[in-house]
Length: 230
Image 1 (spheres, rainbow, N blue to C red):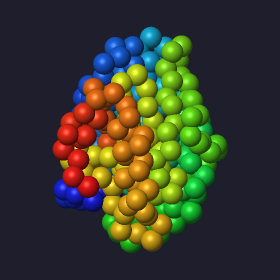
Image 2: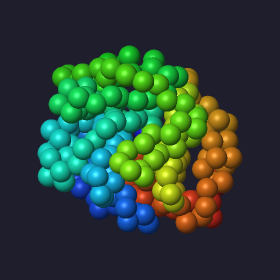
Image 3: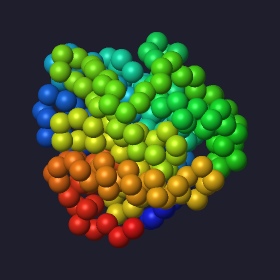
């Protein structure tokens, strides 16, 4: 959920080829669910091992891409606990037999994910995600021989929001978008914390770092720093 340039919540499954400077690590973006969440599949080219980030819905679509690409996901990761980033988790866990990781501070959002999905989208068949392990600042999530994602806490949009960073790319969830930031309209959101996360953490990354957001098009840290008006 974003604070600027809200997207039309019309279901539109879309595959977007993502740019990546590290040719050993591949990234593919699947746009899923009624809120058009960017679900990312990240894997090492040589071993085919990888992770799935923010599987917000449409588990069958995601599983079909996993099979088509012949990749071997080791973990399911969530940047935060909002329903539009986690609704496909349980189905993927069951099918792939892999663990789901998220920051513990967003556990309360997972517990209300099904009711939130019903309220916002009318979804009546959602399945509540089950967490296997909690992640925190500076944790490393490894896959393949050299694949590694660093966990960076980025509270504000939600108390347990995180981003995943590796070698010139960052998966920013709903913390930072192209020309926008995550909404802070709910009681558990704090704009001060969100802006601090962006300015003191994300904007400390190199300008050429590619930003893969939770919704919308990719951007770079440099571009967002130049156009930041919040």
